[in-house]
Image (tube, helix red, strand yellow):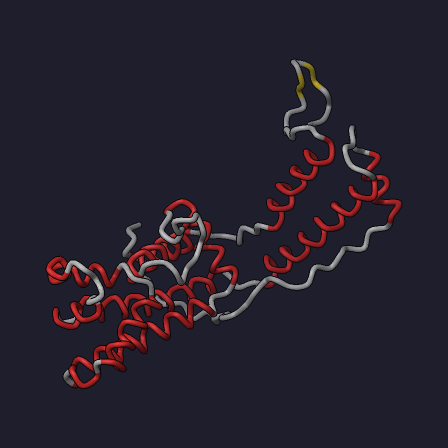
Length: 267
């Protein structure tokens, strides 16, 4: 499926979950001390004190229940796609306004650059490489500082850029944590929303990168069918493996064969 196909799909009627967050207070699961002691006794070796191991197990359980809450009560796939589509619509609207700018306005918005002759040919490309906040700031400065120098048509275009950029920025700030996770998972592979310091940040990404990443993520979600893939269980297994290595000093394997001999269980 091509990256532009997301715009051709019918819009979903799913309810939007702006601002939803799976982050809530950590609640330690009820687990009797004697049960914890039994778990600790099962360890083949132990590098930490009993109480430290018990505390780590309880902390892991608390984090698991919090992520389980996010899996069970977070926005559905359809709701996540609706939110991403709405935001993509604002990004495409802003991009269209940039591409339709008359040359003199594109040049005015990028007038801080030192190479003015290059800007005459590439002003639009420069603007599409700016963040939404930068675009809003540039248009707002033109409106406030050089209002009298622009025609009514120019002022109307600048006002539309400010309004659209502001609306897109507000939607990004209100995006639910599950939809952000979808973007993060894809950005790890594409690198489009990963900054120079290897930091994932949506609102600091160039407009062109934002559009491309949102389309890629929406297309991937459209291709998925069947039950939702919950992340809390694989996350728990991963953390348990880390805990095993930390407490016992042994590596984790799913193989029951060691040094050519069957040991009846993997460790």
